[in-house]
Image 1: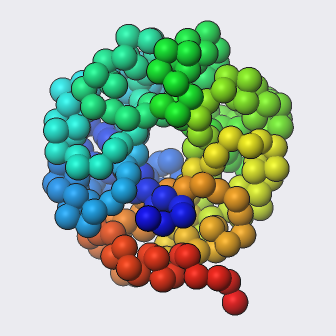
Image 2 (image 1 turned 45 degrees about the horizontal axis):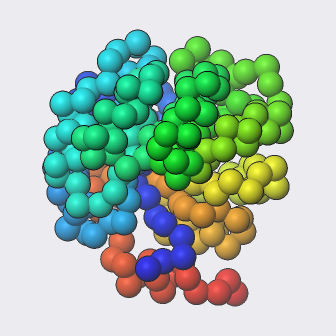
Length: 251
């Protein structure tokens, strides 16, 4: 098993799979269940699904779709989007979700603390979007008037199991991760970090692992586009290739 998890991050939009660029203009990729079957064949360790409509448009969680995803997934998966109550979380776990990813509802501290108490820290992931080195709300599409240091300290008090960091500026750009940002956040917390936003080639994943203390590498475009014209091709490197490239020592 690799020391670092390499996790495809998949976006759900109107029951389809999409990919955004800097959180804008979602490009349709296809049926999420087809993508899951491909990732099953590739023996991916873990998946993250984020519904980009549910919270922003005040929609209910599409439990039917998540149930279908759970029935097809051979690997553990996390889900985020539209989670507002303990009942939401309980039902997601009941239908097969292993972790919940919570973003906007992080301001509901009593919800998060109760979720951690009932289901355990390991099952709750705090999701933080960052733009221009500031905390960003994808609901209002504006940065928040709170320092990153303060926000992270508040997250730590909730005792979540992981923090999922997504760089809005790097999202879909395939130009490499924001190493400086990830290191800044790593210095602020001991909570394991999943970093996402910017992977365009396998060397980007290696650079992130070599130069930061992340526990997992998340990526979207890297797993769904190929070539200079970003043709849609859902794939995942062979385990042997990941092992050789990512686990080798830096030069």
